[in-house]
Each structure stands twice: as C-alpha cells, then as structure tokens.
Amino acid sequence: MHDTAPAAPTHAHRHGAPQHDAAPWRRRLVLWSGGVLVGLVAVAFIKLTNLAYAGFAQFIHGHAWLALLITPIGFALIAWYIQRYMPDARGSGIPEVIAAQDANSRDLSERLVGWRITLAKFLMTPLALLTGASIGNEGPTVQIGAGVMHTLGKRFGFEEPQAAARFILAGGGAGLAAAFNAPLAGVVFAIEELAGTFEHRLSGILIAAVLFAGVVSLSILGNYSYFGNVAASLPLGEGWLAVLMIGGIGGLAGGLFARLILLDIGPLPRLATLRGRYPVPVAALGGLLLAGLGLASHGSIYGTGYEQARALLEGAVRNPGQSFGALKLIANVINVWSGVPGGTLSPALAVGTGLGANVAHFFPQVTPAAIMLLGMAAYLSGVAQTPLTAAVICLEITPSQNLALPILAAALLGRASSALICRTPMYNVFAARLTEAYARQRAAGQPRHDECPAQQGPP
Image 1: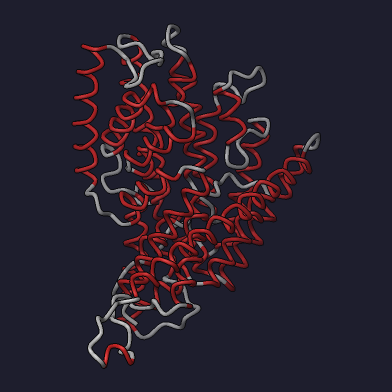
Image 2 (image 1 turned 30 degrees about the vertical axis):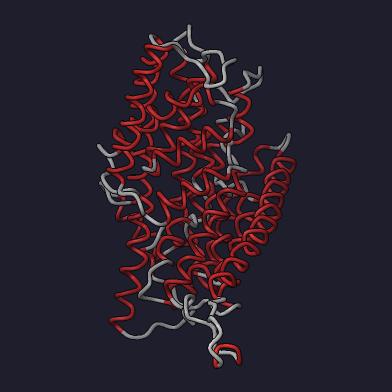
C-alpha cells in the first residue's frame, strides 16, 4: 500500500466529520520502533563480531603459524557457501543498501536487504573474523540495519517502492549510528552516501565555504569556544602544514585503495574473471596471502584494526609500528580480492591512523595524535569520497571538537586528491554494477529469486 494513502472511511467520515490521515503517524511509529530494533540488533552483532575476533586472536596466540591453516581454509569455506547458497551476500553492505533503494525493482530490494541476506550477513561477518579476516563490521551493520527496517516496513504494509526506500535509508543510517555510537554521523551518512542527496562536488564546496570562514575567524579572534575554556590543539603554522601533507597523502592512498578493489586498472580485470570462475581457490589463495602478511606484521593486520589504531593514538609502548598503515591497507585489499564479505569503514580508520603516525614524524612540534586523527579523516574521505561523513565520524568518535576545522580541511583535501586516482566514488560504482547486472538479467529473462546479479557487484 502507499504510505501516504488516506485511511479507509469510517462511520464518522460518512457523516461529515473531519477526516484524519493515520498513515503518517503509523509510519512514524513503525520507524521509531524500527530504530530501537536496529539498535538492539546492531549491538548484538557488534558484540558477536568482537567475540569472534577475540576467539581467533586467542587461538593463534603463541602459535601464529596456525593462521596459515585457519585463514585459507576458512576463506575457502565461506566462498563455497556464498557461491552455492547465498551469492547476494557478497560485498561490504553499503553498495547493496544504495542499490536496494532503486524504485524500479522491488525484487532487487528484497534480494539485497531481505531477511535472508540480513541473517546471512549477521552470521558470516563474525565467521570471517573468526578465521582472521581483515574487515570491519560497520558496512555489514549498515546492511543489517536496512534489512531489519525493510522487513519491519513490509510487515506493516509499507511495500510501495518509495515507502520501502525510506525504510531502507533510515535503517542504513541507524545501523551506522549504532555501529560507531555516532548518531550525527548516521544522519550525515544517510544523506550524503546512501540517499545521494548531496552531489559530491556540492559537499566539497560546502566544506570549503565553512573552512575558509572558520580559518578567517580563527586567525583574527584566535581559537576560542563560544562559551570559553577551550585550549588550542593544532597551531596555525606547522600544524596546518601537517593538514596539507596528511590530507594529500591520505586522500591519494584512499583513492588507490578504491581503484584496486574496483578491479578496473591494469591486469586486475583478469583477477575479477578468475574470481568469478574459481571463487573457492581464489579465496583460499587470498587467505594464505593474508596469513603470510599477518606473520610478517606480528598479527597486527587481522580484524578491524581498532585495537592497533587506539594503541597508536594513545602512544602505547607496544603499538603496531610504523609500517602498520601500509600493511593494513594491503591486507584490506587482499581481503576484498579474496571475495570474503566484510566492511571497509573501520579498517579505513585504522589505515588512516597508521598513515598519520608516519606523517607525524615530520612535525615534532605537533601532537602526534592530532595528525593521526587528521589521517583518519583524510583516508576515510579518500576511500568513500564522502568528506562530510568522514569529518563527522572523526569528530564524534573522539573528543576532538578543537580540531573541527583541521578535520574538515583534511577530509576536503582527501576527497580532492582521491578524485585524481578514482573519479567516481567506489560505493556508487559497486551499486551501479549491481543494478546494471540485475537489469541485464531482467532483459535476458526473469531471474530466479535466489540468483545473484552475477559477479559484477562489489567484491
């Protein structure tokens, strides 16, 4: 039914009483209830993924070589199951949510955020972390949130394409907010990335306008808070040179990551073909390479990278070292190439932290943690090319209000430099591949519900 259709006439309506449309309130109640449910499911999912990774770390503790067996075998089993039973479960989750909002295909929405896929992602992401994958849980949480809200909307009759898209969008944003414990980031992410309400050039223009006005105010009035009692965290001189450097490096690295996992440069299209034909052997090989990299990095590249990034930010004596950023980036690429599903957002924050730690050595007068935080914003913005989302996430997940302008600047520079390597945001490319593959299937003949939009979707 249409979610704005008036309620059926009652006895009062027939006698001339004012007619009230109950559908908007009904929709609000379902959305609010769905938000609560998404939060509960997301918390359970995050706890499950944390337990899974802790189990892997405990199992290989003191026996790092065991990863050479566990990771390839685990990756192969996951790839076999996906290929045989759940091909739509591939991908990080974010492109699927974007594609699922296509108003022209209710069937595609069901396949990408239906309850079967939601359950599969809920179980397979922890399984991948249990085998040593280098993935995040935020992308899958976005898809799970969208799936929960979509299923709930259908249950209460909101199946019309426009209404379904609203529920999918709300669920995706709620999933990200719950995953990062960052409600504003969830709102901005839903607007900037999932809904595509802002053109990507417009978000850059918006940030630039805010940035220039803020820098002028900062230069004239100093770094003050509206109600006072805030100390400066980044000097205007050397600190802003660090912003320029980490913004460029982080953005270029993010753009490189995007192009590598898009498999559209050099000989990489051949890898996409091989993965489509032989998904299980390719996954096993990817797992073996990842385990080898894990041995070389003393285990720092497994999982989301949260613990390693936090150790760097806090200046812990035992941190993952200066090579962590580069090695984690390579590990994330290998994981995506293997075809094992998982998110890229939290690993991106870890990579950005590592790159920031490298750049911090060139600016001894600047607090290293500040440059690492700028690296988070720059690299995440370079990967997803969503500077507003990257900036808000970094502002919400750390007590860094004093760094608001530098973070905005780093995110803007990251977006601009990333576009030099990857002109179109990768999530949009993957979403377009999903919808185009589905359209080709429809043109060739009605596909079965359990078939996948081929291998053209996100890896």
